Length: 306
Image (cartoon, rainbow, N blue to C red):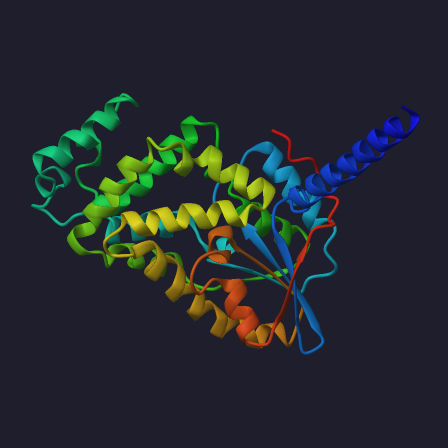
């Protein structure tokens, strides 16, 4: 009996060690994702952002920023420190609005019209409020509406938080593209982006695509989860707009700008986490350009518990 008892204790000890190791591996990256980039004796950092926030997400971001060494330049998708609300409104008016006599109502067929109107009714809205807008811009507005109703703040994105941090610390800022260029990417879609609008209506009712799930993936730096969402989105799309236009083409354009910077100074590159997954993702492109990429998992960031 003592021998059996000893064997049982031994097996239990081994089991708990195994379980501990599994948990350690599972939560090794249970924090927002950040990478160290090394190129020609210069070190920079790549931080995956999300374009919305809650208080705990800002705290986690602050925890990461406080542990960074001195940074020369903050690089973001667009330079938010130089993007003024009045200019944004003018660009939206110019690019996202339909030219009369076109209207959202007469662009959609009866089935599409009903689907959109039914969704808007859940927020006590109606299609007339959006009638002057192009379908792709309505899709973006619907995503923001749902996120806001779920308690997420699009006015204070992680990108803006990092930009404000840079300003307070006298760090120069640089944008990889302009707000106008971003709008024009969406505006190039066929039929004013009706396909994007209809796909968004489907995704709004799918928990996998909702902001709470995406934000949790950001909190935990869950690239595998994001990859699955991207794969599903690509399978649902006929035109591969997200993969080709929003990710691949932009990533390739960004690398051309980033590579010379990475050999000259210490940068913090803060762009959407989705750019780190899928075909032609930034991590792959950086590696292909002889830049050493190492994910950091030992930052003692602030708690990301909700």
